[in-house]
Length: 328
Image (cartoon, rainbow, N blue to C red):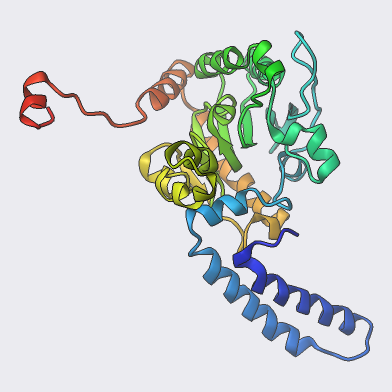
């Protein structure tokens, strides 16, 4: 498990609890009472620490190597998942996974970015950063879902689209732009779940939906804190300062109207209880799908389009107001 600076005391206590449990199981001595007291103490520590996380600390939690990945959620929430490969133009992109699955007795199309679980897997998945063929595969799956009337569930966890030379040569920007256009008008219900990092255009490329749900400790921003710090202060080490101002946490984004719902994580973060957070996501998906299904398709698509077009607030300044220093 990754050692986060603010998490060290909790991890040490959890290790002590595990040691006592092993000793109790071996019947060397019964530590049940001591274990119970320590578990209560650990739960209290997790709650106190995680309720007061700064934006930069939430960024660190979102990047935690033990945090559940898209495939972890798919295996726990859906049945009969059938992965589909390739964009029918170039090749398959392991950074994006997807295919039809069964959710509560109905077929859905589930897809998302997939980060690795270790070094070898991370390299295979390109650290969850899709190439153009990944976005084109995602669009192919959405078009298939619309054809058959299957709702789409998209899981987002990426630092951003891959910025390599090959990706640019194969039309990275065009692939993302086409997804934005075509996902906006796809005639089926689309729910987005931001469960880790939601980085820039790489995230929004599979993030246009009727409902955008976000885990409590996930982050979603136009740029990473390090990138923002490098631009504003020419110093990426000021990432924690940047994190405070770019409004990337779930609570900030709910207030701004960028997301629709926050899914509460288990005490101490999603990485501490895969099954519990999967159950929370399942409940949120069920509730939101039930809300979307009765809508007429024309109304659904129009509402989705307007949802994203209306994001952001602007001031219109007339020449007269500009001269007097007043906004109109």
